[in-house]
Amino acid sequence: MNLVIDFGNTNIKCAVFDTDHLRDTQTFKEISDVRAYINDHIYYQIGVCSVSHDPATIKAKIPELENALFLNHKTKTPLQINYNTPNTLGMDRLAAAVGGQALFPDTPLMIIDIGTCITYDYVSATGTYEGGIISPGIELRYKSMNDYTKNLPLLHDLDSESFIGKSTRSSMTSGVINGIAAEIQSHISQLLLNNADLKVIMTGGGSKTFESKIKSDIFVSLEIVLVGLNRVLEYNVE
Image (cartoon, rainbow, N blue to C red; front, side):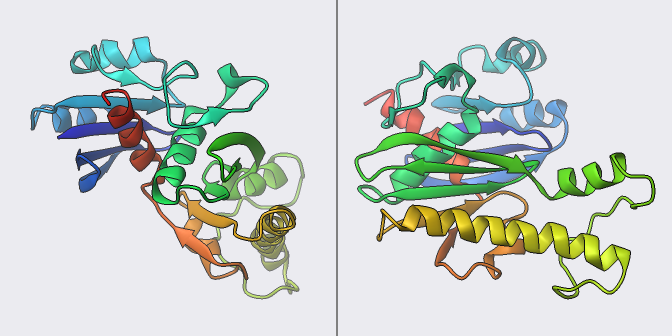
């Protein structure tokens, strides 16, 4: 069995794979809980992706990961990388792109991850990661309005009552939720101009909020980063 771990900005997600078959997923807040989960089983190989902790810190807190494969821009993957600064590319973005290609090979892909930030990543039909777009996520948009104005409250709403707000709260909620929905639809439409068979994959904690708000056909996969990490593990032993 393979174990893959995604250290995100908010949560730590673990998954167990038997070859390419997903057996179990767990989400944790604390590194100590991850260590306890690791020690429950023996794994053939372990892959790690992190945007929140550097490998040295993770290994110091979880010595069992000393020999794990830590995804970085030099790791061998099934994708070609056409990105000017691969050393700055978020490894969660790369893992999601690999996961998308594993699910839909020979197909142009847009992978949309709605988390702390919203990332849009494009993979060509030839299996080349071409780059993407980064914008603020739901919480960041609410927080920025609260931080940089005197009278706007801090909200956490995940849906809007109507398009035209009838109160400050509903106006803010509409601006954030409907604004993101319009942004997503616009980016999809832009890529569809030259990719009629584009497959759109949506993931991240906010994906369920926007799945029904987008007119385009959307495939939701909350485990796409984990699928990609497992594919990288398998690819490095082929």
